[in-house]
Structure formats: C-alpha cells, structure tokens
Length: 100
Image (tube, rainbow, N blue to C red; front, side, top):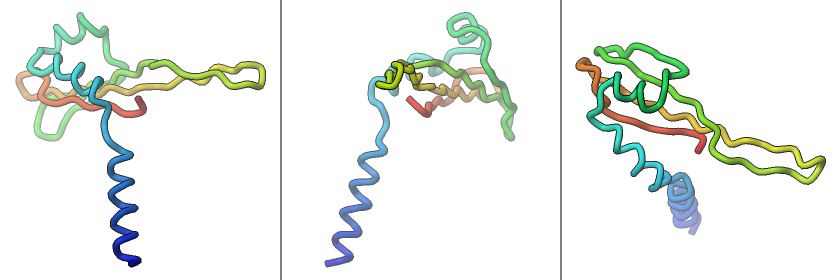
C-alpha cells in the first residue's frame, strides 16, 4: 500500500513540473538561426558563456507578467529566463527556459 502511494506521489510530482507548451512552441522558431539574426530579433543577451565543446550559451532575462498583492497593491513580477545554446557554427542548436 505504501509503495503504490509513493509511486502515485512521484507521478503527480512529475506531471506538476511539466513544461509550458506555448513557450516551447515559440522557442522552436529560433532553431537553426544564427547569432546575428538572434541579436537583431531579441537584442544583445544579458549574459554569454562559452560551452565546453564549442559554441556559446546566451541568456535573456525578461519580465513575463506578474501579480499584485493586497497590502498596498505591490506588484511582484515573474522573471522569465530564456536560454539559447549555439553550436560551433554559431547556429541555435537548443533552447530552454526557466521561471516562466
């Protein structure tokens, strides 16, 4: 009984941490684009790092909505981080996001 309850809890946790399908679909439009096109489209990245086997990782931080709270109606912004991975030929090979 405890084992089945544990498996159920793990399954619920994994489904709760799924990705945003709308954001996944919007990030696919950057696949195969070069760095010049990305910089023209999104502007300069907030951070750049080099990858071990060549290429770079670009990070963009954006505000994606938010909500206001009752005491004094303070606005708490949702910060979204978009990460683009470039290969040796300076083309987007993969992308991900967090905090959205």
